Length: 144
Ligand code: HEC
Image (tube, rainbow, N blue to C red):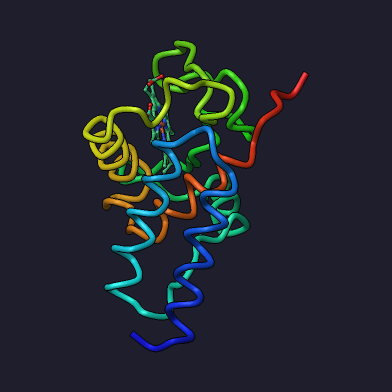
């Protein structure tokens, strides 16, 4: 590993740790960042901006409709969402608002795979997952 890369990777480690308290979500950001980094050494740190763009971006779903993660989870992941298919409420995704989020690693993988397939027609990449959770960690206030 080149020294510049190592500094960048440790930078991620420390910035992730500086956020403290929502440990599992942070561990997942770190885990997905590492996987993404080994597949693509150019990916050195998660991007909150890209995570936010991804969250709000509309995709043409395999069923032909347009949908974004925000369609059900609202444009603020700290809000209670609403399933556009069943009409049921969805507790907030943001782990600082809903501490039950991202506690069960297997469930996270399953939900990602399911939702990414529903919306993108394929699983999300490790870099998209790292960016996504890094962004969710920054949302702390529900919209009134
Ligand atoms: C059709 C509505 C809908 C859309 C669109 C949607 N989700 Fe979800 N999402 C849900 C529901 C329902 C749950 C599970 C209910 C719950 O856990 O509260 C959920 C839960 C999740 C979880 C589980 C988090 C945890 O550990 O508890 C993740 C991760 C997730 N969604 C990611 C995404 C991503 C990424 C997208 C966009 C690619 C997306 N969702 C789009 C409805 C949706």
